[in-house]
Image 1 (cartoon, rainbow, N blue to C red):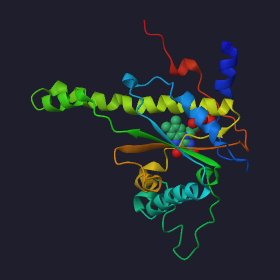
Image 2: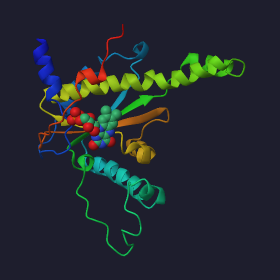
Image 3: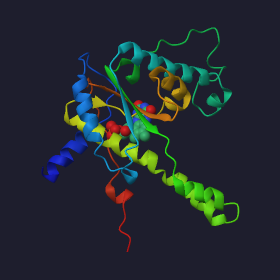
Length: 226
Ligand SMILES: Cc1cc2nc3c(=O)[nH]c(=O)nc-3n(C[C@H](O)[C@H](O)[C@H](O)COP(=O)(O)O)c2cc1C
């Protein structure tokens, strides 16, 4: 493959949030996930796990859990103060809630929930034990948390996955937004084991939109260190 073809593939992928009715074949998703597992990952631990969800009721239940999490937060005054929700003065209790169109999650023909198992980093144990007597060990522990190879590894696989899905003519969007509010409920729906964390949701379907998005020029995000 020429670099120009690879560039076309990479630059042609966009996050897709509107879908055709057309169903997505399970086999295609399995093939895409298999390719995604060739992503680089910390110590080749391959600490990822993918749940393919094609059952409309299960997708709807996950979307409902996400919506319930958002609704729960909507009444918090802190949301209005942060400009994230209408304050009670502009949204009288008596007015009915606006009708919501099902979002990218609820309307997707397929969903991939990406999990990662909790892995123990033996070095973290060392830093933790040592930090009581050595300040630098505490700093190392904080840096270790920032570097977080567990999440970086799964993110690498998700990037591959999105690219393969795009190459297959499918559209997808990488979502973390619903998880802070609904992670536990979603894990319950999926029946994940206790050591598994769901860290991303990827609705998938045949695209019914062709959005364009720009990138900052590389000169703004890159420098040559001399
Ligand atoms: C870690 C991560 C989390 C994201 N979470 C969401 C999300 O919760 N909802 C959403 O609609 N898009 C989400 N996105 C998609 C981004 O909004 C999108 O990638 C970005 O705007 C660039 O657009 P593009 O993917 O079309 O190039 C997420 C992307 C990443 C990498």
